[in-house]
Image (cartoon, rainbow, N blue to C red; front, side):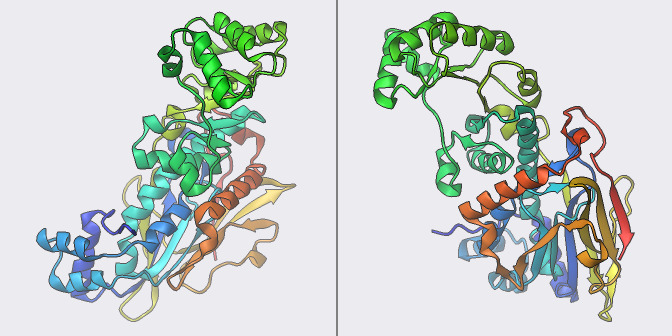
Length: 440
């Protein structure tokens, strides 16, 4: 059964609609833009994620009887506005950066063209999804850069809200993680799932050996055994003795990982288990992963850090009105001028300049009008960054569901190769490439 997303909304959006319908400005054509003034956490690049989830939420953005009753009982809006909300269907156009795309300060990540009332009511929904998912994807991309060719698995569900955990698994997968422990993420988004046993499994049995034998009987010798419940060295010895030298892997979840991993690798090799893989999972983030680059680790499992954006849980994006028609039907650029929160008005077209395949700048062409927007022909050598997600209210299904996730993952892998070398450093710094504004 479909669940309405219409009340995933701040009250002031509805009170603005109420007032706008009263004074006749609710139907005024407008352009809204979602962007970040800066990259949160001193990151050198950002990764767009959540667009496919937003489109799915837009399909279910309907004020049904229950939602209308709540608004009526709370006297949030008047009767005429309730009637307008009951008939709400987004009929405008939405363009933006593809999911998995890189973004920088000022990048017009999402542009909504609609009436004022139709567009303003989407502010909170769009920001809550893209701010969360993009923060997770950005952190995940940094971890993927640090991991290099070694696989990453997301396993942070217990450190997030139950629905946020599913969204985080999706965002991490788009940005380079190869699997998740979350089964709902696997079912909903088609992400590969993984997982074997926790320390509780070992503690359930009389001995560690009993636990290992039972796990192998159920999952086969290719399974991964958790060897640090008691003594790691003894755990490794028991694991190989029980499973044989064909044991798939061992997992280490504690200790000084560079030292422990090296010791375990030596021990496995001495026992003849030269092909047994080592997975580490102890409170990893991009810095810990980078510190393990020279260690004999085969894969990583990351929990808390990735699902919380590795210390930056939101991308800090905003949703602003940047253009509108005036009373005479002429287009007017509008912008907020507040100190440290100023925005740039006008409809925008975005391009990324490349030199020998490496990104050098983000070009944002600003139009004071509505039709005169730059095209790729006016920026040779640059890659256009915006695509259409919704046209006249019709959502393009290519960006939704598991297929949309796979497309976003592939796109991210491709565009991350465009980053200059300085973008791959993990220290806080300025954005890897400058944002340059030009007049259309």
